[in-house]
Amino acid sequence: MSGSSSVTAMKKVVQQLRLEARLNRIKVSQAAADLKQFCLQNAQHDPLLTGVSSSTNPFRPQKVCSFL
Image (cartoon, rainbow, N blue to C red; front, side):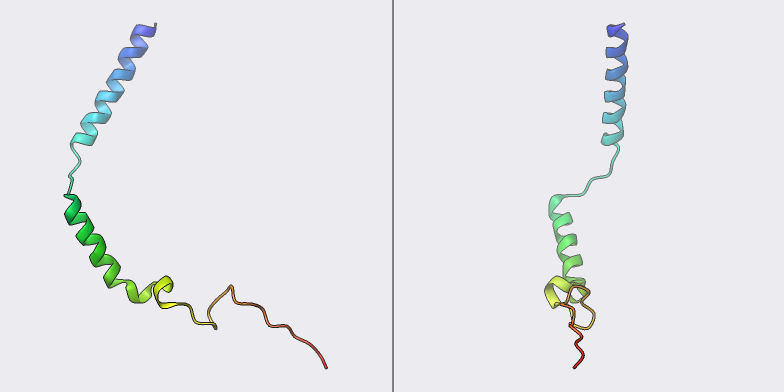
C-alpha cells in the first residue's frame, strides 16, 4: 500500500512542477522597475508619505464636551 501512495505522491509532485514550468516569468530587474514606477505614480495618494488631515483622521483624539 505504501508503494502506491508513494507513486501517487510523486505524480502530484510532477504535476505541480509541470504547472510551475509553464508559468511566464519576468526578470527581477523588470519587476523592480515596474514596482518603482508604480510607487512613484501613487506616492501622492499614500497617507504614509503625505500624512492624513486631522478632519478625516479616524484615530484623532476625541474632543471632550463639557458643560459650563
